[in-house]
Image (cartoon, rainbow, N blue to C red; front, side):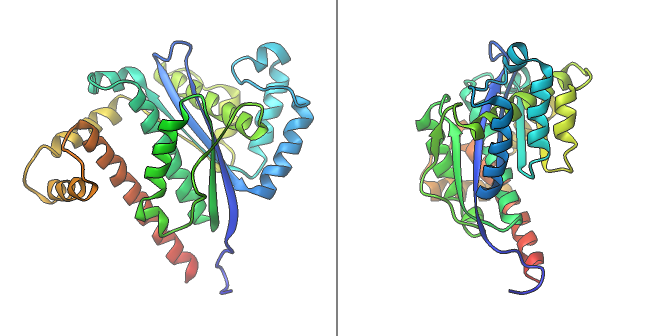
Amino acid sequence: MPSGRKAFAMASIFGDESADGNAEVVFAVAGLVALDSQWDQTVDRWLQITNGEDFHATDWQHHHGPESYEELVQVIRSSGLYGWGVAIDLASFRAEFPGLTQDYAYHKCFIEVADRLIKLSAEHGYKDLRFTFDGRQGQGTTGLLYDYISSQNEWVDLLSFADGIAFDNRKNPRIQMADLLARETMRGCEHALRNATYRKSFVALASSDSRIQFDFLMGEYFSQWREGLRDLEKTTGIYANEYWAWIKKQNMQDNLNSRIKYLVWYEAKCLGQSGQDTRSMQDN
């Protein structure tokens, strides 16, 4: 094997979602990816603290104290796992897209997290990537999103995917870790919206040598995204021509749903091209 080239290995992604009490302020999705051997080691440390109890990030501190919660944060922080959390400012989302249900917020967060974790996996030479998500948001919708993402040539050319997405619940320690990360993502976005000081637990995760990263999609983001959709309303220009070619290839009608899917695909394409550049550097 050429010097500097990483060996391919099997890895798994586990993910979950979180929202404020009434799902009116912030919605978030987060996921963690690692080699299966890393997952096993981290689970052992996690279980030493939880003693196998069901973990729910929303109430663990209340029932077990902040010290126990911070210990679990440190397990993730020092684990070597890579993670992404993406949260949406729901008020800004509703203001720019009043005709869309909040299901689209979940779709957007899921795709954004999945794209980022796939890119990370390609960069680190992972192969046969497996997805497991908490099933509360509906297995049908999440399964369709997974099929849509994993079929994109931009990702298929970089690594292989397990057939279908798996679903589990919060009895699984790996889902519990994703639950904690999703909760911290949601709370972090809440604090950003209020210009408040971030929680100690959020800062600990965000300072984990860039292995765990967060993105908050707020007012300016959705304003710019809306402008991107307006650009697609033009009938001339390279961008519009590419869109019309894309919906024809996908056998779709031109509507807001198609335009949003196109923008999601376009973002994945850009991330995929970045991943190809990274792979090329690794191969040289």
